[in-house]
Image 1 (cartoon, rainbow over the protein chains, first blue to last red):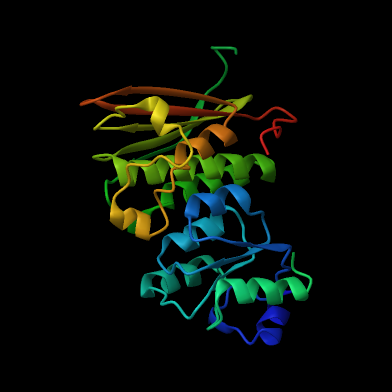
Image 2 (cartoon, rainbow over the protein chains, first blue to last red; image 1 turned 90 degrees about the vertical axis):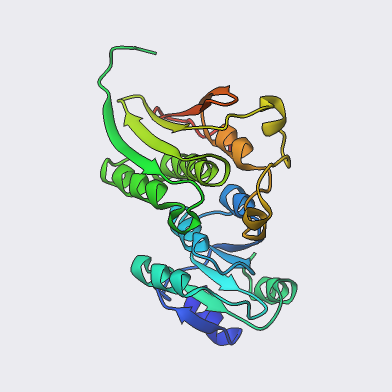
Length: 110
Length: 152
């Protein structure tokens, strides 16, 4: 499923639009950056409450489909600026990581 | 390993201590260079993860240092060297979950005690030289030969 469809279905806020046509291959949820590096795969959507710049570096390095910031956590201005530069999708939702993971699973993102 | 094969330094940059804002920049630069060299995506991923962890380690744990990458026809070597303080207990440092990171670093999601484990996991060979009071040099070598993906 494309990120664009997920945005519509889950009513996600698009904080930075990199490329919403990208296909989501799966998901990974963690706030520990090393775990994300080690365990997620290219094309995954990453669910986290972190909003600092390094999330963009990670998404770019391991080629994630995008970052979904949960529970409406704040996202630093520098993060947004860097994500725009590198065309990394950043989405946000008021739902928590657990609820969003469930909904993503129901939509077939496993 | 042939000692006399052609070696090209493709990255050599300073990494400042404590500057989280630029964390990942050197790794990101290396990644795009490797793309241009036509290295397979799976290998680039391994190098990117190892390099990022090395870079973040310099930022979090040291007084500053540098990150260097060399490419030969058979492998990539990423070398992180710093100006100290050195690793007091190397065995512990490699234990998953053990970390000496600051509270600030932990709040940002670093300091999970996975860094060195990740570097080891994604490298084909890892050499660490450290001396308390002097500094640390870590060399991660990743093979460019076929089927080096058994670490996944």
